[in-house]
Length: 413
Image 1 (cartoon, rainbow, N blue to C red):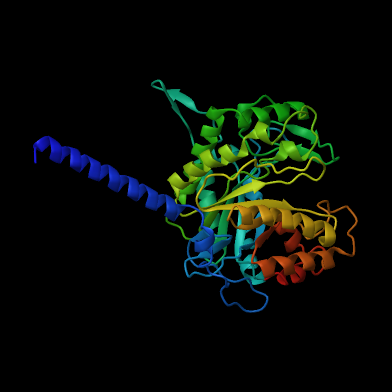
Image 2 (image 1 turned 180 degrees about the horizontal axis):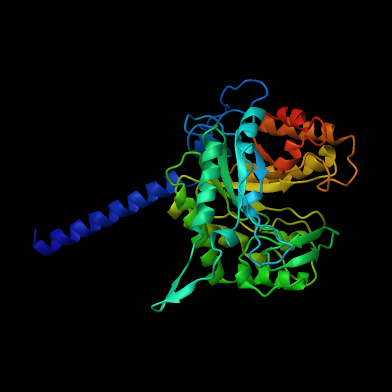
């Protein structure tokens, strides 16, 4: 055999091996097929009454379930904590500074029986200063004080067996936008999420809509956001207490309300599937252990549509969504089935990122007596289907307002 022939065969063998290896990795990283899903775990870990099942180690997805390191179904029953997501980068007196979560929150969540926390952070706080050019190169500056505070909060929860799902916050896009009133009549003193240094200060919803729309159509800004996420994810690459990343809370906001200036904006305007793919890949470069939560939304009125136009091509991905409805049955149940049908068709787990127990989000609004019955219907269904959820507001639980709220939520454990 000539030297040239041997070299050619060696190159061919290496190419074939690389192709087979790549295919094997793709299969291992991808969602479970119908056949593989049949072998997925179906049971949660044993747990005492009134306590959510503990989650062991890092987690992964298998078919339509999240599974922990001991091959138990990991049903994350969480509470949302927002303190670290506030931002007064615009300098407005209407905006609050970020703060560490209350020291009592970690022991309280553990004692009350929750197994996880949805810990909201923000790009504005991670990257509080605009990038600068140094020797012809753009340099990003990340807020080490903030990141240390985040690490401290994560340690407080993880040390008590409460797993952490990190979520990038978005509420009317940026603290550059203040003194806003939504089309639904909700007053927002200060937005939050994207850095205020990206924009001029404004009290115009139209300006907010323009900024948000432009972000989802700007490869540069999405790249900056992805870099910030990678920094956060990498910080916990060896910390089994952090199990997930919710890529962007209410990324679909422009679809969910008829803001001035939003006419003509639809799901294809925001490109959420490709947005989640780009950011999700950056997160996994920083921390391959994290499950990726991709927020979706289903329109209430005709024509009905989902915010995500196709299945995001991401490993370890979860279809997540907020859940509000006027009642559990028939309104809420019908809506839940639509979300679960989509996640099942995609062979992905479903998870409820925000649930308010059929209570008004405003403390001054009238509480309907049916909130307990509706909440128990929702919680019973979620427990039976092994789907996790996050109650929206720790402060509501802490105040125990209304009476019996914690007791109602415990029925979902």
